[in-house]
Length: 252
Image (tube, rainbow, N blue to C red):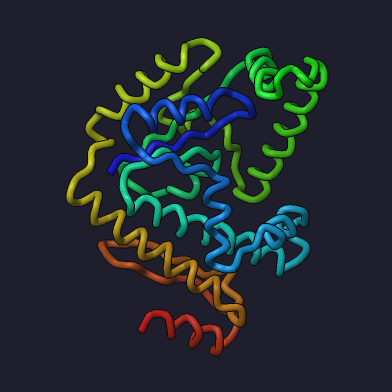
């Protein structure tokens, strides 16, 4: 059950690469936007997510919880997609959401500014000039970088964290696709009985964490659900015996 996670720079050609890989391998293509929509099943509305993004988490506990809950819901929603079979995930948060998952090929797709400008102009059918295109890309980059550092606590463009770097401006989309397919043949991306068991356990853990987040009367900002030695383990602390009881109800 290989998983290909593509992190993307704005208008870098990642969408085209993802589509080519998914079509070649007959994998499902799932985007970050798809996962955001699926978090609604846990009660995370788009408006609630936007509010969490627009406030500094250190200032308001409610906004901190909203973002913690979004991450729990997004991970649970994405793991459900994985249970359905091999997929290509297009989103810069893939490496974070799929941390600890086996068989994940993390790919960074980057391109120089001129390529990205050309791509944007082409997508907008030449209704935007190069100066405006550059300004728009720089604004999106700045906002994206700020969100990733603030909400995920890391630099999403730390290239050393990725298994493969693709430059669509330097190689064709078919060649980029071939590079990914060749890397996917390496042993550490092959599905085994053990990796399938791990995926099953991580899926259970992700769903349990999402269910805990759904309990509106429980303050769960310091609760973690992990997989250790073949078991799902809940650790952390809560604010009251009532919060503890609310979590215990989900474990029965």
